[in-house]
Image 1: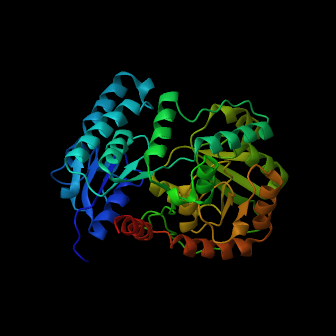
Image 2: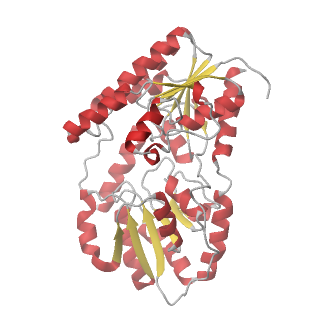
Image 3: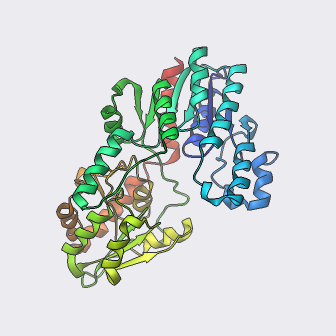
Length: 403
């Protein structure tokens, strides 16, 4: 690898893509520092914390191949939040003060040693980007969410179609304003899919400010343990949904589709329940199976016990679980508003269209040989989306910005 100057830093208080973004910069030979809350390695605050709360709880706070000495930790906002939440659990979802404190610290670090490029993450880089702009540093912003204008429009339509009186507000006003300012300050926005791109184009952002890069699935966690077996067509198709049981994930439209499928399909739902869908769950009764929280190892076994995965999202920038399911050998049914990649466009159905969704489900219920065929297709397809591929794409972005 050609020796290069330390021309890029990554800063983020949480996880999301930050650890992979930092590793990509290290692999490219351009990383100055990775500013994070904690890094789980010997000699780091994250390692000490792991002794208290358990190493498994911090499994995502490290990445294989990354030199720990490049991780610069600032754990205090995160630790203070932990203490605050114990005294006041109702504030557990209040991240703005925590992220702001980390952000201001990272901005001070950048001021002292500005790189050529800075990469930050949503809700956590407002001051970082402001400082970078003043210093003439190129600014990249990772934004996991769809643009709020697009999101509000599609969820309003979904509520009307489903006959649900849902008041949608993606963020508190202060957080929404913060995200908006971060978007404006960034020169490049990292997005993950076609629907993600559409949302930012709808928000008024030009193509040249968007860099689309699909996310990844970890093959060490998500894989099939047993060969594909042809299931008995006399038994109901075992259909699985994993995710929040709410309007945004398309649950009302999935239930409508299920009614059209009759006894040919048995649906399992795994995920947190939203009050807006409780009436639907009560009406469904024993026609569905509800599963509680599971570890990743348990979820892999749950994938193995089902035939087909469904994610009928109204709005999803990516949809990790769909790629996980495919890696475990399940054909996936997703919508055109779900960002997860699929082997063929026919694996997508229009969002909020129960008839189209039911037709796709019944196609598998009536043709179990196709289930087995598509299981192999899904597994091979998902194998293309490993973390190494993600980092290769990101390294290409880094090279283009630095050159």
